[in-house]
Length: 210
Image (cartoon, rainbow, N blue to C red; front, side, top):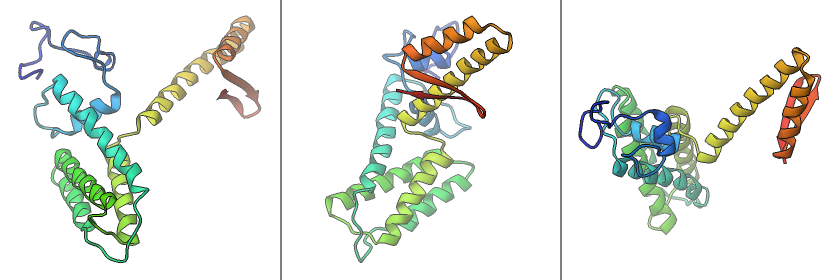
């Protein structure tokens, strides 16, 4: 649904994935990154109705940012000799939610409990041992990146650039195989002007960005 209404062409409230990313739709205030949209969708159970709205998408954008920032904060936490937080319980809550028919909304809620714990540790209102700190870092990264499949925006952009460059280099290779050396050289030269250095080697074609 969209803003509580059923999505349909007759109402003009249906949109395609690329419109979500670019914001090129009358119902969208702006475009949202693929990771934001993915995180938004994970906040609803896969068998439940998902209601799209700018408010919900913007909340997901902020929520994803909070999660990723907490991982950076975690790096600054200094361990203590005692635990006043129960990291194992939060971890178990995450596993229990996944075992409950892939209940990703509950997983995310538990991860935000971990965020609260990290904030308490940062402010000095809680203590954590090195063992629990290591466990907290490990299971948060495991659930965020491996299980939920989220990525930091820069990493996601890097993946898209890698895929795009592979398509371009495949076109250049095809041009060379067809003995269209003028096109092959043109692709190389234009990439160079854009800051990409193309190297042809025995192991294949590689590239760097300067």
